[in-house]
Image (cartoon, rainbow, N blue to C red):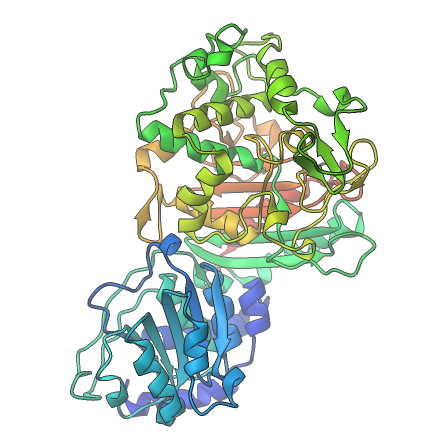
Amino acid sequence: MEKKYMRKNNFAGIITISFIALFTFNACAQDHQQNQQRLSLLHTISSNTVLLNNQDNTIPLVDLDKKNIASVSLGFAFHSTFDSLLNKYTKVSSFSSDQYLSSTTLNDLEDDLKYFNLVIISLPVSAVNDPRNMGFINSLAKSKKMIISLFGETGSLLAFDGLNAPLIWSNQNNDEAAITVPQMIFGGIGTSKKLSANYSPKYLSGSGSVTSPTRLKYTLPEDAAVNSDNLKEIDNIANEAIRAQAAPGIVVLVAKDGKVIFNKAYGNHTYNNGLTEKVTDIFDLASLTKTTATTPTVMRLYEEHKLNLDTNIGAYIPKARLSPMNNIKVREVMLHQAGFIPYIPFHNFIKTGDYSRDSSAAYPTKVADFYYIKKGFFKDFMWPKMLNSPIQTRGKYVYSDISMYVMKEISERLSGIPLDAYVWENFYKPLGMQTAGFLPRNRFTKDQIVPTEQDTYFRKTLLEGYVHDQGAALAGGVSGHAGLFASANDVAIIYQMLLNKGTYGGTRYFQSQTVDMFTQKQSDISRRGLGFDRWDPDASKKYPSELASPQTYGHTGYTGTCVWVDPAKGLVYVFLSNRVTPSVSEKLGNMKIRPRIQDAIYRAIEKGSN
């Protein structure tokens, strides 16, 4: 970190453009030549940023489910960029000393941080000279775990000699540094730089920690040897879909080799309102629930030896022992070979008196705004109807939603925990997935959630944050086959964990052999894995896309969603839309929008960055 390096790169800092709006939220500024220059700057910054005081291996952060994190800017001009990157990894609350200018101290700010157990402080070198700032840091260090992020050229680090908190120092003070340091904190980018001179009695030449990447990196396509210009076809296809009213809004995310190289939103929430689609918007994932909630739960219970795939349903569900389901094995259920009928239209059985427009002890289950189903409707009507439905095609592949109603019941009996609570505590929260979960209206505003159908035949309302699937809605919004909502970034995180063979953020969620077994072909009569859909060997089907490799696994969702993981290419592809808005349309499928975008990604990868 010599000063001659700083002088050399001051010019680079001047010529770089402010691309944070594109970079932070879309990760795809589609100009290959500009992106190569930007990437060179980002690499220069990351390779010259040093991590100090990391003896306890605090960085990269682990155990996110145990952390309540605040980000505090002490005069850092690029804190909005900094905080936006932090929030891609987990929920981080933002504070700024600018909000406390009327006070001679920052005692009020320190008091406002009382509920946080980790505080990430960002400040420019110039702010170190303000006694108010250093008084705040030194006082906070007595009661809180901290990470100091320092930006700009300095001749001394003496002010921090008394601190033991991790200190990340970038000698640049710009947007690019604000992009880089948060990713180092969370393990999107590794650290390797060591001090090349003595900066204080404590921070001597040779000081600095080496860390390795553990989470997704948010970067430009060129960072994964992909030419941004070759990804423009994604824009063309997505915009074609919106013009044809195949869906009012679309979000596409592409992660290659652990790097998010494309994340872009198109269109609007509906065809007739002004809400522009955002990459952070929350979608009804529909049947992605099967592989993003229920199947991971089954995988965990299998690893814990609580669940045996070759044990029959009746061994786990007492009520099933006198039903046609009794002797069916769990493996058959996970492969959609149990012989269940595809689905039961439960909403067609609702009679006057089964629902109310107001909630009460007799009508406690909320199905939509102003629609409550009577107490016990699932237990007394839906579940017995499923248990006693005919077994007609056992041994054949017949895709059925009933399979995941059954697996939810088995999982909850074995874990003793409701499915929605189980996946939040065991997967989503520790992975840093902020939006993923059931019943999103309990946590988010309607503006953050993309609407689905204008339901004119059942709930008689626009569905905003209530599951589109009628059976899942009548079950209270939490079901094994539908009901999960999430943003594209959250979907990418959990599937990157699967692509990593069960590890993410320094934590192992599954053994690699478990991931292999569930995601690889497990049926002699279909393309399926256990819970997961897969590449189809019938070349005429071109499923999930023409160029997908035989290793590809994932799932699609009725609302217009899909996620596909291709280990052969190190690829995670997420597509979210609300094609059922305002009413169900088949255009998205007929126009082959999802597979065409997937193939455009493959072609861009094959062409490389040339």
